[in-house]
Every structure is written in structure tokens, then in C-alpha cells.
Image (cartoon, rainbow, N blue to C red; front, side, top):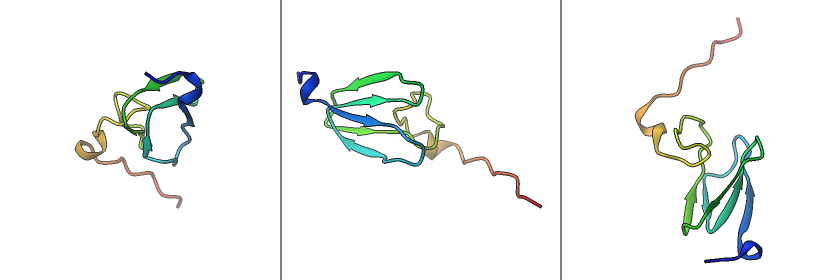
Length: 71
């Protein structure tokens, strides 16, 4: 098990990366930290995941809602 100095720290930003080689420490927008020991971590950027900030593949099951147009 890696110690804190060996972990990568990743800040989740809207529109940011999707796949990150682990182990990583994810820091959500609200400051919540989540340690992931997997060799590859999928980070949700669509915000439809029930496991946010981790991706649960919800983007495959539910279409993205359309934004109202200006005008």
C-alpha cells in the first residue's frame, strides 16, 4: 500500500481529465478527499454518476439533458 508521499494528488475540475493512472487522491470541488488505490481511476465529468466524483458509467444509460437555447 503506497504512503501519502507516493500518492498522486488530482484536483477534479469540471471538464477535466477522465482517466488517471493510480493510486491517486481525488479532491472534489467541496474539498472532500477520496483515496483510490486502483491502477486506473475513472473520474466523472458529466456529473451523472451516483458515485461522483468516480465514474459509474451512468453516461451510457441516461442521455444528457438539453440546455435551453438563448433566443
